[in-house]
Length: 206
Image (tube, rainbow, N blue to C red; front, side, top):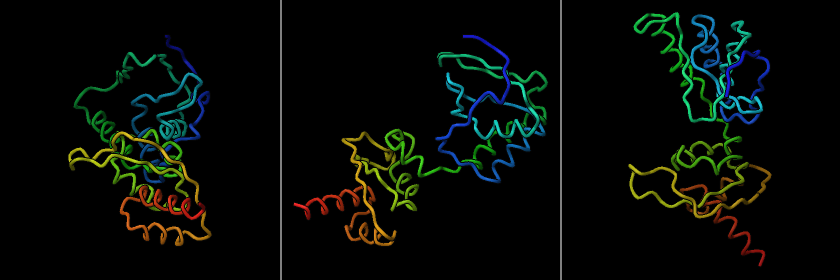
């Protein structure tokens, strides 16, 4: 473990970042860095790839920040960033806090295609209805169907433990053909509908 000074350009953006960000959110991040400077830390792997803070790094670079203080940790300690120029209750401190919360909220734009690649990692992070909504516009590209236990009640309607994972690959010349096939199954859950289509196809080949 150690602390060292490095250059901000020594870190690499995460090419598999599931947050695409957006113009408005990035503008808020950029403005906060320009107005208040750096606040929270970003997170990188041992091989210097950003896994949290990709958009923050962009804002820092635009604000002219070139140097970083790197704190090594194995996850058993919490890294605290102390702004010695701020006091609790100061307008500048409040502004920085509000900007941090709001810019993170606004700049979140899920990359559904990237999340499809990591769908087995979404358990506990998304409810099933959220997954269905997230992938609603990507039916033709959907390659992974999950078999999930049905939630017992609304309060516990989180993604539950998977029994198995099926990875079918289907193709159609037009997305509306695919949508009609899903609708024809009569299933509300798109994953279950996809499984039905696969079963029907396999049965037809026997």
